[in-house]
Length: 207
Image (cartoon, rainbow, N blue to C red; front, side):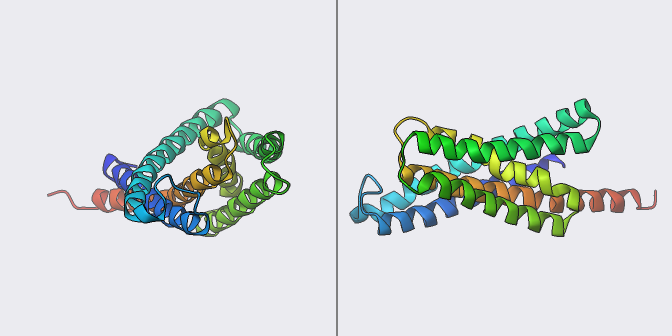
């Protein structure tokens, strides 16, 4: 991964965050008129503000993704065996599923959100992991699931704290999840292009 490709992943992730935030925020605003501090009369201004928030969410997602890659590199160096690290990631993901549900239940969001959100997030994470292994290899299933659920959960922590607001939680989790999915599904493509470019460069005859 060279700097050029990393920069491409960075700004495209921010763009994805902005677009997804505008779309999801607009839908939430039209279905719930209490959502959005300016109301529907200022929909254009709200869209601009949502785009700015989406750019920040995209950048935040990129930071979390980079932190996970660093953690993954360090963990593989410590455990030596990849299956040990995968087992720990799998256990942590399952623990996070129950932890998220318990956190929402303890804050008394309502009678259904505390179990619907963890299950929906888990199913979507498994779906992204399935796509990932179809495009790469089966060993990517657990790390992808860990990234999509646990890392998204950690990144959305600010929205889960304090006074519980379901709209705020959904508004933050959706773009974070999509940005993380975009990055993990783009990573192997960028690495493959980089490898292909390096191979082509090394194959050139020396003048």
